Image (tube, rainbow over all chains, first blue to last red; front, side, top):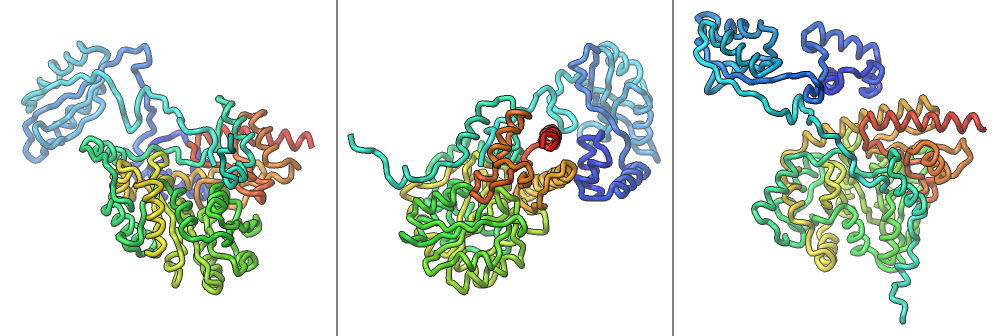
Length: 160
Length: 389
């Protein structure tokens, strides 16, 4: 039941416990307990909303920044990642295999704001060797959802 | 001028609810629960293989029976999923959808005057295909109280010394009924006793929600008297690719392949390459889609319970078959009114045989959001009918 609950609410966190129970053929109380357990165990970390900011009047700029760092004795990359993820404008930080070490997803109001964050804050951190900033020009698909395209049912209306 | 038409063809009954279908086709803004095909797109990796085969210029005929690699994959699949063992060289024919297999099997197996038993409600093509093959259709009216399963008694009563073939359409369109192992074992005895053959249409086999589907061909003594029909349309959401297959005794498959060669040549090549990918790497897709259908099925059953429309719990395909007898209307009248007043399209049970009277086929090959809106409207409609009564 756990995996099925997660698969459903990953796509629709607004679903009610009653509907979840019906769809899974389970008792409401069991579903509620399972959700509570998933939250307590930190498996469910939050209930977010997917927003296509492009469609709003708010200016928003996203960037992906490749960061090369010197790992620190005894702490590996974790300490550096922590230094970076504390900034509220940082959306996500990943440790990456390959040509660089950390991938930072950043959001700002303008290109200028992002640029100054990188030059003033990120690249001046001790142990940051280099950065390479990529601005996101357009989001086609995010969190498994295709943005901006309305799905149309092209099947015949009725068919035996 | 002479009459250009064949009497046999002209005499074929057109679908009884053509008129209703025409009205629906005009209503562009209606919500439909009337479709008999999956709402999912064909999984991308399968489409990608189709595209790749085109890029590689694989645009020629295949052998009449179909690509050997695909036939091998089909046989492996039937073995691993349903414990049915077939030889890809002599016992397997790739067809243009399951429908072609049904037609070919009837043409290859019946002599004029042979009786073909067709349980109804069931898919619309069995009866006309039997007639076109010069067989005499014998209809069994399946019953709501048996959850629309075929019982040994019903079968026994329909058999005469002219009976050649039983069509076994489970999991069933339109009722969603299934035949479990003990149901099949019961009719198996009758089939063997009377030495008849079975055309088992298992196109919805993967969409079974009460344990794994059991194929009658896997029962002792049944493989040699069964033509198994299956395909890619429902399990892999590949309706438009038009690809199915028939497996059975080599002597029957050889005759079917002969007719198939003259009528069709071979199934579409692009679809065959895509289908190889489906069988090799598509098990997870099938499981995910079946899980989604199952959730919708439970949701619909719960909604019908709230509305108070009686409906046996169907464990197969993607249909529920609620009973509307309490309103004193025919299925077609009910469906027409529902369409006019609430703009919801469903299929009257009578589209699938006379014994579908008093029932509706509701398809859940739609998103939950879509089903919610439609079921709210059906609920309002039913409440209004009850007030008027």
